[in-house]
Picture: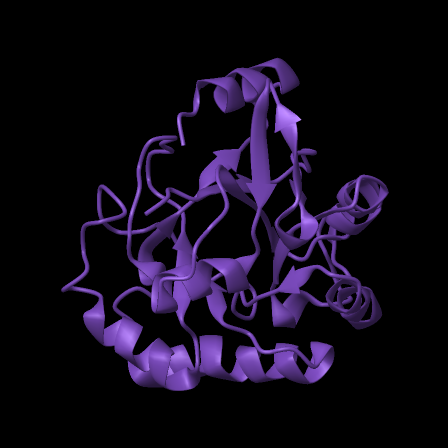
Amino acid sequence: SRRVVLRHAHHRTRHVHHHRDGQGGEVHGVPWRGVDEGGISGAGLYGLPLPPHPFVITFDDGRLSQWTNAVPLLRKDDFTAVFFPCTGLIGKTVGPQTYMTAAEIQNLASTGFSVEDHTINDDTDFFFANTKTLNKLTDQTKSVLENLTGDPVQFIAYSGLWPWPTATQGTANESGMFTTLASYGYVGGVLDLHVDSAVDTSPALWQLPRVRIGLGDTVAGLARWFRDQHI
């Protein structure tokens, strides 16, 4: 088995890339290889092999800054990413934040980027939520995105922090939620921990931890992080 690194660009856009179709590039001499959510689900569900040093970058919420700042550079270098827009924010401006339009999200999906689900507004913590709430926050939003892009939606970026100390904990407690999400057609979920960790791992598709790229991260710091990974 391989550990897949999921880097999450949180708040302000940072330019850390992964390459399309299993290709990639070197960072500090390490030949990282990009995989999308389909590659992760194929490995997790069917045991399909992953390339060495697999890497995924994710963007949440569908903010316009991702479209204007990150996407042109990703395309320039022929990299891809996974976007988790909130369906209730598509095409809107809320406070200081402006969000991608439906046409821009359709363009992402039609040009090699993955579009997955991040609920309606990312404002409701649905851990321990009942089925009625999950249906509204996930199944209905999944249908909206599938109708918009024409592609299946398999992964959910959970709203709210994972309520357990590590990504591998809480499986039994959240099993009912996982079963409900599976009945809607999801195969896995990505999560954010209370305390960011670059070493937390999980073999479970429903409990995939992400390493956040935050406002305090620097290019030099990210380069050191890549160099120090032994995957």
